[in-house]
Length: 425
Image (cartoon, rainbow, N blue to C red; front, top):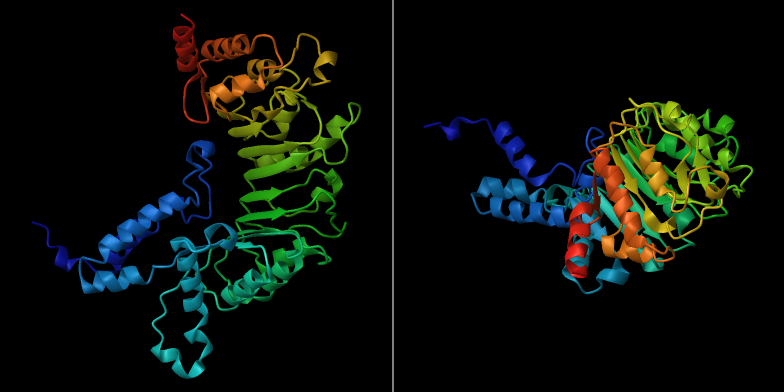
């Protein structure tokens, strides 16, 4: 029998840490080699974290040394959202964790006596009023240096206070790798400020309003940046060429904020053309107007594995190169009910243009996700005379090309259509 008593303490700690720090839930990098959308619900998911907490509490029961080790990781995830979590256990836990961060640490005469059990790795903070802002400042001012993920959301009016607080405490956040915040209104060059304060970021997301504008001399310099979520739809190609983000593989953007018309729609694609060379994952989460993707798109993004878009509003102009590596496609179906005006100018294409886009995808595509339930998608297609016929045509295209197509609940389209046949008998 193996003598476990002889295993080094450091090895046991690594084993226990693997139980507590689950991949995905506290990770700062998305695995770009798999279908991100199939695993994305694990990344920063409270349910997955809750399961790891159950495991941590179980480990505490083994012995005193394991209990001491597990207690050091008690508050590695803090979610503060007073408006939604008032008087709930989750909100009380967040307040207790923040109290532990700030309380005894403020008393220099008792630093040696503090049993510091709040070492957050991830903080998600919602700010809706002044009291929230005060608590947030306390949490950031005395935060553990282990923090790797910080997401801050809030109502309009708090943007500059949040930005200033985070930047001011950058020296106390040496391990920060993922940052999400609201775009400040008064900071002259926020992107350069973030680049200087947190040069090792691997993920950066900055929410902005429709009226947000960047200074022409402001740009990102983040050599390790892996994932970017930022609306670059109003930025020119010349401006984006100044950015230094050579490691980017995951881009989430909107297109066409600069008032798309039928005559200048291709201008909206400049951000993809500028940043596409290294992209593995591309998510177009908003479109301000209809766009026809030219065949050159595939040369702009030669490494693309996963592509999420509105394939009726932003549709493919012509067949993609046969051997392009794209494998996973996510279709945001919200524009399928709209009559795309560009379609009327394109021979052999009819609304909804998603059917044409599917037929133009590269041969390597193996999985299509329609981000609706099939029942909800049929309701979206109601403006057309035969929504079920559209689904059957989609299924025919995917069967012919050996593409598995399913809805957001994981139901295969063929299974859904078979159930409809049974209902109609």
